[in-house]
Amino acid sequence: MSRILVIDDDSQIRKMLRKMLATAGYAVAEARDGAQALDIQAREPADMIITDIIMPVKGGIDTIQEFTEKYPGVKIIAMSGGGFLGAEDHLTIPQRMGVVHTFAKPLEREKILSAVKDLLNQPVA
Image (tube, rainbow, N blue to C red; front, side):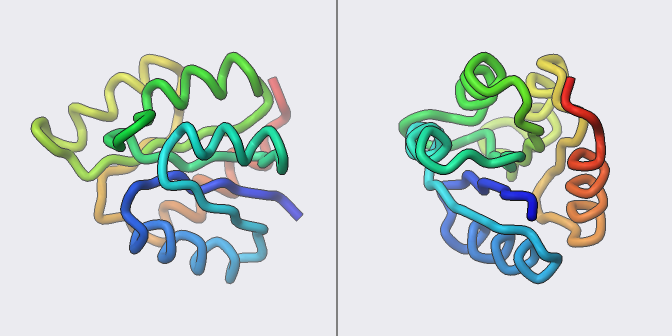
C-alpha cells in the first residue's frame, strides 16, 4: 500500500485529503507544515507528498526543495489557495522545480486521485 503525506496548515484540507485518499486505498499521514513533514518522513517514509505552498514555519517551496534533496524518490504534488498572489502564481515555482502536478484550491477529487495514481505508477527516477 502506498503511503502519502499530506502537508497543509489548514486542518480541514488535511482532513478532506486524508479521507479522500484513505477511501481510495492509500495509507495517509498528515503534517501542519514542512518542518513537521520532514520529521515524519524521517520516521515513517512516505512514497508521495501533497504539499500546500503557503504555510508558516516551513513553506511549500522550501519543503519541496528539501524533500527533493533528501528523498529523491518521493513523488510530489503541490497545491495552493493563493494568498497575496493568485494560486496559479504560487504554483509556477514548483512547476519550475519539476513538480508535474499542481492544483489550485478548491481541489477537485477526481483530478487529485488521477494525479496520485499517475505519479505512483511512474518508476522512481
